[in-house]
Image (cartoon, rainbow over all chains, first blue to last red; front, side, top):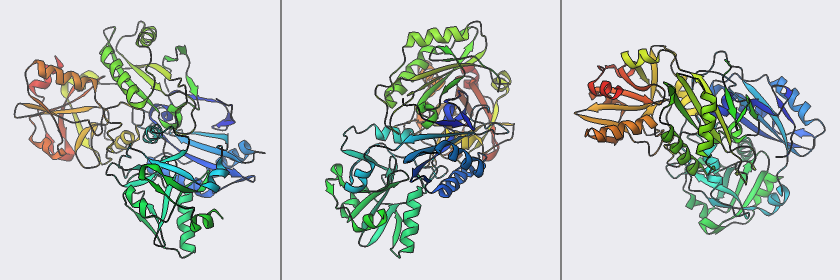
Amino acid sequence: METVAVLINGRREQRIEVFDRGFQYGDGLFETLLIDDRQILFWNEHIERLEAGCRRLGIPAPDGSLLYREALELCFGADESVLKIILTRGPGGRGYLSPAPVHPTRVLSLHPLPAQIEKRRQEGVRVCLCRTPLGINPCLAGVKHCNRLEQILARSEWSDPEIYEGLMCDSEGWLVEGTMTNLFWVKEGHLLTPRVDRCGVAGIVRAWVLRTMHAWRIATSEVRMRPSELREAGEVFLTNSVIGIVPVIGCPSLDCTWPVGDLTRRLQG
Amino acid sequence: METVAVLINGRREQRIEVFDRGFQYGDGLFETLLIDDRQILFWNEHIERLEAGCRRLGIPAPDGSLLYREALELCFGADESVLKIILTRGPGGRGYLSPAPVHPTRVLSLHPLPAQIEKRRQEGVRVCLCRTPLGINPCLAGVKHCNRLEQILARSEWSDPEIYEGLMCDSEGWLVEGTMTNLFWVKEGHLLTPRVDRCGVAGIVRAWVLRTMHAWRIATSEVRMRPSELREAGEVFLTNSVIGIVPVIGCPSLDCTWPVGDLTRRLQG
């Protein structure tokens, strides 16, 4: 494991208490932010989502200015990196019952960019369809929480390095997202993306794309659709906070290829 | 937080690496075992379930004799305690992708018994119905894994100390289990319990009850039923590895009461 810079509750440490509920139960939230050109991209949006997640899970939200100070301290002098923020309910409680008061644990860590990010943005990527479903639970839907076994099982389904991402459906077979990305496709001039009201993550770049489409007066719909409907798409792309917008050029499991589309390129700016 | 004895990978420690996947993603399994009369109850059954969970999640199973030695070391001289074993996929990996090779983390910790355990076994407990659903996912169903946000949200729904447990349904409204227990009820001479093939935990005491019923030639069924069907039950009880068998005497949300039944008492032995 490479050594990376970490701040745990403001201190340079690498270890957390074993009774932290993040470790015991996955009882927490996280954000993954891109540092580019000495800027933290979408800081406000990430902190707003973290705060919204805190409200959903009943975890006291951290002081935004404290978090920003810690982020700046950790990222000082860094360029082209990934900042991960984890916030857990902290230690304690009796079993699943939350402790009172809650003393959340916040962990900031700084990581190198994933490999081949620019190549993927330019040339596009291939995806597969995963068999592991996403359980439907409106209480957790949209939240970027630390219960990620579904994504881990889905990610274990392929080892082909030519496949960048796996698409997941909910337990009723509706397309939702990739294991680490949101999904968009264009059909008859409309930009479509799955709803994330019953499962899935409400991505920061996903929201930015929807806002941008509104500004550009391009029609969008959040839909429930089967994976097979991707066959009728004119262009397909994935989003997340680190890679931004990445074109999808093929899905061998659907026997499909797509061109890198105009809207994808326009969104990539 | 009270200080409790902990062994992490065989060493007396209280802290784990922050990049352990247990902390990052809830990527692990756990077992909760009762120590009573200087014996670890159902040791073999717990280790078999842990191994089965490892196969499901693709985590290398720990050496059973090593785990037993560590358990004996930790529990030496202890009486009436709870032993918790956590096994995670350890540190590393790129995002959700598992590291290769995997170096699992095993954590054994020893805790005091919960309060009022004997009183609850004798007098019975009250339950409520939780609104938080369990997501349906056959890939994770039955497994005692460390993704427990659903149970945490459900447990946050009540604060009345007279309510011991909350019953949870899956996202389609079928009764599954309590937040920390399995559920049984008797109807017309049959012992019924919800199926755990789509969500829920396949409890050790649950399996023992089903085996015992078989030996006693009492009919059992694993069913999908609505919570309202509990109104027709003659007796109701909960099981888990710490409390064993505990009678349910009422559910205010269903406006129901039940007597402590003969079968419940017979199973309590």
